Length: 430
Image (cartoon, rainbow, N blue to C red):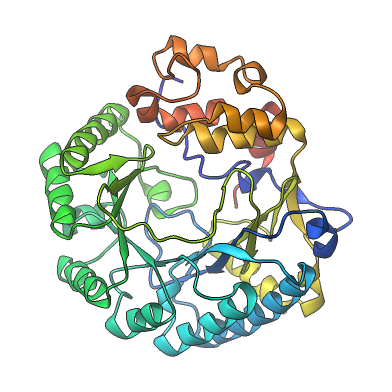
């Protein structure tokens, strides 16, 4: 773990560990024995107005209008089939719409999307929606607010046009400012702003400028992402990493921690900072370690206790288009099955629970772990003592130290199991 930046472990296992499920299990069987009283609902829109240079998400830039219409029609079919596969009393605790950029849709299309969301998941729940400076327009935001959106997240990345261009995201500051003003005018309770550090040419002074400009809007949340150069992305095709890049990113991260905590933000993970007086939008209790997730759309994943599943995964422009075309061609009956996924045995379930807890600032709840699995986390994962030896984990082997949080992107990949690592390494990125 010489570099702090091995990879962002936001889900475990990663989709590159998924494989075809043969035979395909029926969703009614997959979910039949699962708790369904506090599910997470997620909808994926794989469209954007542009493909940023750092982006390896499953998305297509500027699709034909007829494809957008066809996607909404197919999404409605999938929602009907998936909902019929769940128990009649299945209920949801939280909802999110991501992408891509959901607000790539017009206001009228967003209204249609919310009809689908309501039919599949219900209403009046905490709801997060992703947007972009170019698409956070008043008419779209009005639709989001009218349908109960409680959180909106926008990737600004930098408040300097030159840095945004260097990251492969051409945008104008005037557009960013107009979008932020429109979001505040919409009175959606929680605004999150994403920023990126480690951009070529970025300095402590320019990073400070972006932090200061973000803080002027008093966002309830800030997510700070270290820049990664990944295969098949715009930056990956033309950029070379610098020898001193790790040092620079780590210095910028430490600078941001000081600035944001000094401004009244509480650090909740390596990436997430939340304003201490930000409103808490209450919904039914949901535990990301245990409760299931239902995903709709061709790039969404779903989680049960022992099976994670999705459609195919791709990064390159041509392969993403092929996956979208395949999704659109499916008969409705195909959506009754899980097709590509990863089965988690009891060991992998323990590891996922650990990782989803350990990489948060509050760390592992030892009593909750033992109640869930009947064992102690430090006994199941004796390698945690090595993290304590480095000063990255406290003496209870439950909570990362400040230095440990800084190395989250090394600790997460280090704790990936051998079988998952082998599956990920065998995957051919396309």
